[in-house]
Image (tube, rainbow, N blue to C red; front, side, top):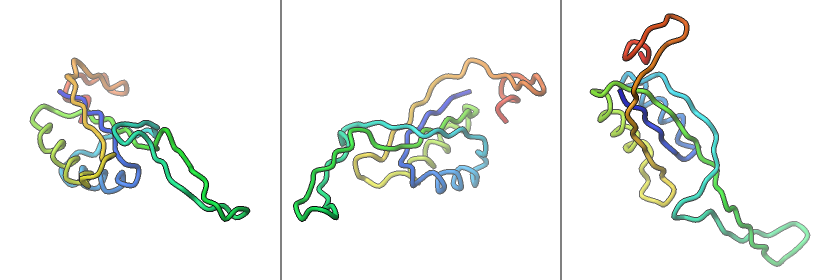
Length: 119
């Protein structure tokens, strides 16, 4: 069993959920996070209503979505490929996918263990 942790653009979450659902991966946890990577945040100029001179706006941390998926070993490759296909734009900030070994899982309601608990 594997745990996937993916950090994605917030606007791609709906497409990601739909694509994962099509390949049979429906269970996922999502949280809103803020972070930065190589793009080092955003810097831009904006005009305000009370001034004709642009003001520099800096966002040190950008909003992202982090999703957690627990998958069987044989599902790993299709899930990773789906995440890449849906989220890859070729620009900085497309995100990252981390794959970790999942030692055990247990469903609280039924006491199922292992792969049965993550289905």
